[in-house]
Length: 164
Image (cartoon, rainbow, N blue to C red):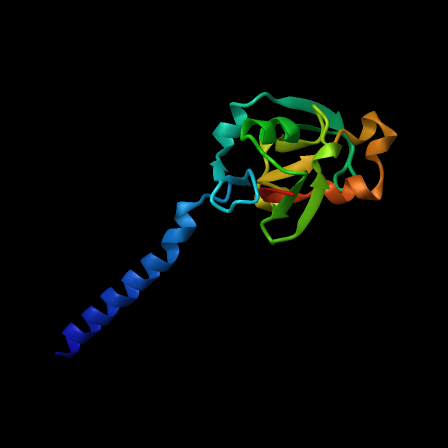
């Protein structure tokens, strides 16, 4: 009888553990969640492959967070939001640790910032500011070298939400 009880307990504990882990597998840490409007029902999940299929921008720049010049590539944020028919006046950018910043849509340029998917040709791990990083071509223009722009340069990005 004790053996049956332990087997049943083990099966219940195993089922609970599997059920607890299932939501983690449902959304990959490398998927970028985009909410295109104030409606929470408009969530779009973009994989790295989906982002790679979009028009890419590449530039080399120095940053205050890296050593030396680094080459970044990824999707211009403006193009990404246009591709999902984003409707709003600002975009809220949220990191894996729930750090968030809000940027006016009026500040988005055709080629800057980008949602960087790669640094020096390699995908970025969470440990190395990935999976995604909002990056500006800081060296191209002094307007990109100020505290406001640096605050928009959110790394470990995993969610974008368009807001009014």
